[in-house]
Length: 164
Image (cartoon, rainbow, N blue to C red; front, top):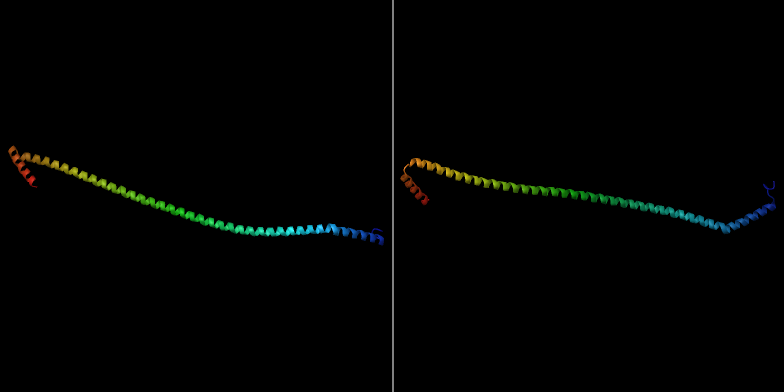
């Protein structure tokens, strides 16, 4: 039973060995272990603060991204509005040009119709005059069978024409 209940001499040697081991550990091992633990604790604190800082930066970036997205949406809306206005302007200008061109074509057609009408009227007048002369000639030939009567009547007409 000597191992379970040590004697006083063994107890002193055990206590002395324990004290030496404790001094050696205190002098050489605990400081590096405690320093390592402090470094580890500090690195964990740094990592946590870095994570917190990264979280804050992410929130800032996210807010910045949201602001950029809103600006992009506004710009897109402005561009769409501008494109729509430009399209409406192009359509309006095309309608105005088409109206002006149609008016020009109508005016040109009206002038052509009037000139052709005038030409047709002149031609009809000329034909009527010719027909009238032919009819008058036939009537006069029948009335004046004598050449002398025709010459006298012709002279009379020539005198009237010169007076007018």
